Image 1: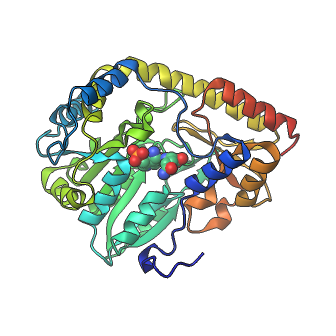
Image 2 (image 1 turned 30 degrees about the vertical axis):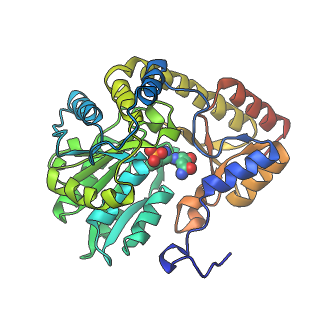
Length: 387
Ligand code: PMP
Ligand code: GLN
């Protein structure tokens, strides 16, 4: 509904699809495979440390860049996994979730009137950040290939203009579950270098890859450390989406621009969670490995259930999500009907795109739920007969 008080820049954005679907699911008592959040806790020592921090009095503002222990743990993890060097004092910033890191990066680095390339389907927060910055979103669709989606680097190349200043890339990719190959990311990096573009690399699902597919850190590609802002968060790696603790890494002058915006958005994030996440980043890799294994199994349970219910299911090699094709029908109508008729909630992929035609038959299901919940969803889907 039109509301005259909402500034023009935000008028195209209603309530997020995640909020809408979660509310509908709760009202109908449906199993919520829409919004991507896990229903189990993260590693116990991490939870313990957060409680101790609160009870022990670590309850005031941290320094503006966030807890040094967490910044150091994040930098050292990047070094261990990718041989990338970031100075915890000047090149790592703790943010209120990856969401704030994304908004602050766009607001601090993109001028009004600039163009920002996003790969469609794109996570909804990118569009809002670009709009708030007074910039223009240029959506380039992914290409369907081998029952999944790949980067269409020719199309990205064709979309670059004199006004382009940033490309936002997200791998492992929400909503498709695609993990982009190193080779395709290298091609994207070549475009960024040739046209002197910044790359915002959203890597929140960096640890959630399956079938031995590995994650490529964009900043690790030749010539990319200098121009990449890498964003990630504790949410998906340690089952703490409600802690809203994330980070951005970039060379000092680039990060300085991100901080200029971030300091007035929240100043700092919640202090007591940060030492707990620092512990998890440094010491809970075995827990993450187990969780990833479990998640791959959950992906298989849900994929089988959707297939048995008569849907064509695309391959997912990462994230919390799998996309199904519903044929000739409209994804949004299908999702509302699924809540009421079957008692399962999902998200229409068209909520993440500018050009819905190509995507209207695609629906995203989240499998980051306990196996019992997934089996109950599978049972409901089967009982509904052919969807
Ligand atoms: N980017 C992507 C691709 C996401 O799916 C999400 C949702 N977790 C975010 C960013 C936001 O992460 P956070 O909850 O840490 O703000
Ligand atoms: N990242 C989650 C998803 O894609 C939702 C986060 C949110 O509700 N904004 O489902």
